[in-house]
Image 1 (cartoon, rainbow, N blue to C red):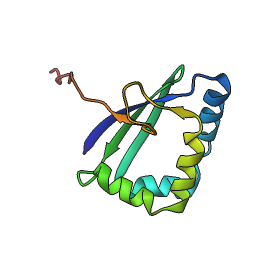
Image 2: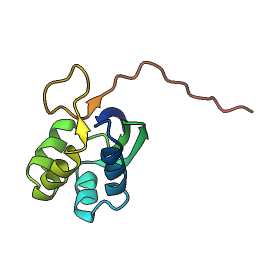
Image 3: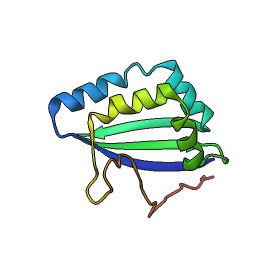
Length: 115
């Protein structure tokens, strides 16, 4: 299993933040199926103000290239991305239309079992 953490910014507008939260309360089955098909086993999105953090647990065969190819071939995903994209903004220092950016892991702690 692989773990990925990504960040994204929403437009810093209360209406955009509220709308983005609301549309994630009832994600349609075709979008959920596209997530499964890409090899994503678990996905969570957290929000602090207008900053989003996504945590993904994937199978070992998952790649972002494979996911992008599947997404580009799926009209429902393209429609979803255009819809949620209206609430997102570019992260500082990223190319135009750049939404989610992959974060680098710099620390990890694992508790050892104790007798």
